[in-house]
Every structure is written in structure tokens, then in C-alpha cells.
Image (tube, rainbow, N blue to C red; front, side, top):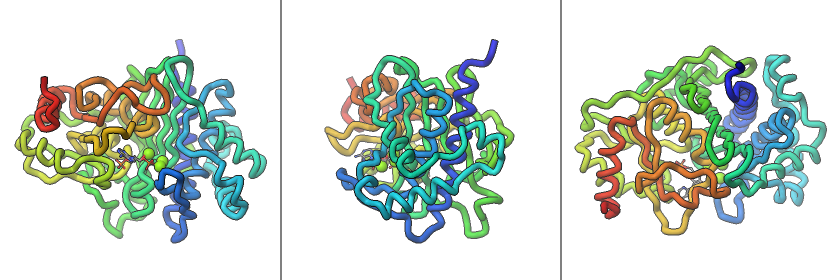
Length: 357
Ligand SMILES: Nc1ncnc2c1ncn2[C@@H]1O[C@H](COP(=O)(O)O)[C@@H](O)[C@H]1OP(=O)(O)O
Ligand SMILES: [Mg+2]
Ligand SMILES: [Mg+2]
Ligand SMILES: [Mg+2]
């Protein structure tokens, strides 16, 4: 019997790898074609281009699947120079391996087809059927700042995440590298030391491999690091204080007798770092009563950490619920940690947030 979701996994891994290749080209450009969206958050030509490439591959293999993606093409339809800049990027980005490129369905025919593909990400999500969640660049602020970012893709079936893939071009390849916020010293070029592809299928464990430019590279099984002494634990959180309450996380760390300062890192790279034991705890504490986390910001990371032996819940201790639409409308915040200590962490979170019963 074939391994469940083997094809979805392979398509997702190669699609993320190809999209990451496009984002790396933009990352090294001075001008990243940044425009601001109606919610004032930034988006670059890399976000749009990566979304087009990923959706092209998904449509080629799974044409009747639904897609929830962060970006939409409306702005591009009204801005021909921006559209053409993105089209040039998309047209010229492919995997080095001809078989892998053909497997993804080959080139997008023209700029209009590219716009239509970007707009295929408008599903409202929900609890029924096969729905992909795409964040083409998660951590756009990190991307613009020269920090960490991630190309994120997850597949939900009836609201339950079955496949998760994260492409993290700026994380060190070495799973054992200490967790640092910066992207490695100047000596580390892309090729030699950076770029990781994390993936997981429900019930089949989690892996990491070097992010390649062609066929998939050799994978290694990964797992969270068992924490014996909490006081030496490393906890990570957003760089952006607007995305997570950093004073509350400091109080929680104090309650847990954690002495090391937090590692502040952009994007779902934090989930990947936990899954391979580089970080121990991820705290994402609400900064507003109304903000609802997007499903594309968490689907892949949630599965990868849990398949690596971690536990991921919101601040009340409930699992993240991906079945209620484009957002995690029934959750507040995120707490991720090795399963053995998650209960202790949640207790401290609830005491500090005043949620304890
Ligand atoms: N108030 C908020 N609370 C939590 N996450 C937020 C908030 N505002 C934006 N985000 C999202 O945080 C994600 C990045 O997470 P991190 O800070 O850990 O890198 C982005 O996808 C960003 O969405 P957006 O793309 O709309 O800005
Ligand atoms: Mg965004
Ligand atoms: Mg995001
Ligand atoms: Mg994004």
C-alpha cells in the first residue's frame, strides 16, 4: 500500500524548493519591489512570485483541491510595471533538475496566467475537503530586514493538517547549529551553509534536509530536544513586538527559571528550529484582543513540531483549529514545546496571562 500523502509531500517539497529559489533571488536584490497592502503590512515581488509558482504546481497535480493563500493579484492587475517585474522573476526561476521541473508541470505560459494562478488562493477554507494553505514569504519584515523568513505550505483534509513543508533559506543547514537570530556570519554563503527544507506527514515523523536548487537532497529524521533542566532552555519568539507580547514572555521565562534571553526570530523558522531541537520553547502571546492568526502562518509548523515530538497549542492549551476558515478564529496565541514539558510551560503561561482556572 502506498504511503499516505506521498505524492502531496513530493509536490509540496519541490514546489517550496522552487519558490524558495525565487525568494532568494529577491532577497539578494537591493530593490525588493515592496508595496504595502491595505492592512499596512509589506509585500514584495518575492511574495507574489513564490505564490504563483507554488499554486502552478498544486494546480498541475491536484486541480480540484482548494487553496488558501496570503496574497492576491488585484494590486498587480492595476500596476503593469510591477506585474512585469514579477513575471520576469517567475518566468526565469526553475529547478536545476529537468525531471523535477517537469514533475511540477513546467513553465507558466504568460503573465496573465500568472495573475490567475495567484488569485487561485482565495478559498475561504473550512472543515471539509482538501485545502492547501500557502504563505509564500512568512516573515516579510524579516525578509526585508535581512533576517529569517520561510516559504510555507500545508495541506489540510477535513480541517486536519496532513502535510507540512517549510523552506527556510537563511537557517543553517546543520541541525545542531546553535539557535541564533542572525543569519550566520559573513563567511557563510548561501551555498555552503544555509538553507533548510523541513517537512512532515501526519503519523510519519518530521525531517530536515538542505534546501536544494534541483532534485530533493538527502533527508534526516528530526526530533525536539528533550529538556531535562528548564533553566537552561532556549525560548524563541517574534522579532516584531507587534506580533507577540515580549514582556509577558519574559515573565513566563522567569516563572520557568529560564535564564537565557529569548532568541527573536522571524517566521515559521521558529517551528522548524524547535522541531530539530535547536530551540526548546516557542511563545507567541497575543498583542491584541481582535487579531486572529492566519492558518498559513501556522499549519506547516504545527504539524512539523508535533511530528517531531513536540506539542503545539494556543495559550489556553487547546490544539490549533485549522477548520474554521482562513484564520485560527477559535485560538489565541501559540505555545509550542517538547511534549514532556508543554504542561509546565502552559501552566506558567496561564498564570502570567491570568488565564489559570
Ligand atoms: N498582531 C499580530 N499578531 C500576531 N501575528 C501577526 C500580527 N500582525 C501580523 N502578524 C503576522 O505575523 C507573521 C510573522 O510572524 P513572526 O513575527 O513570528 O515572524 C506574519 O505573517 C504577520 O502577518 P502579515 O503577513 O499580515 O504581517
Ligand atoms: Mg504578510
Ligand atoms: Mg505570514
Ligand atoms: Mg506572508
